[in-house]
Image (cartoon, helix red, strand yellow):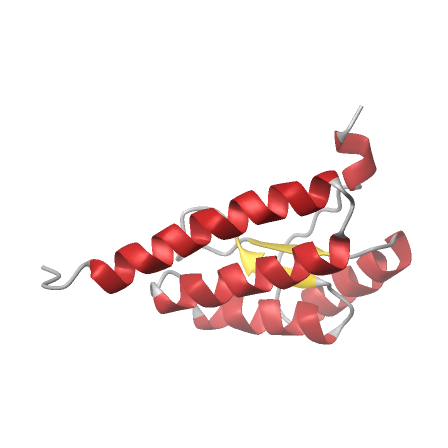
Length: 116
């Protein structure tokens, strides 16, 4: 039982703020800034202890190989992450690097295809 929920609550509220800011940045196609917020969110999720060593390694691999930002996604303690790149070539390269680092499956989605 947690005796002082305030730190956890503050992190959760910060995550909510990051989501709102990211949505606004994506609406204006500000990918570099969005990537920074994704990575900040991952650091918050690490503080909440919902990441894993393998996910942290894959996020770091993404950041070291051209991702603008990366974070775990889903409910945590699983094996799924989201990495943002600004072009197809970097996404293809990143896919190769993530697989070499242990990613089992990868998917690529062009953001432009999501906005009809």
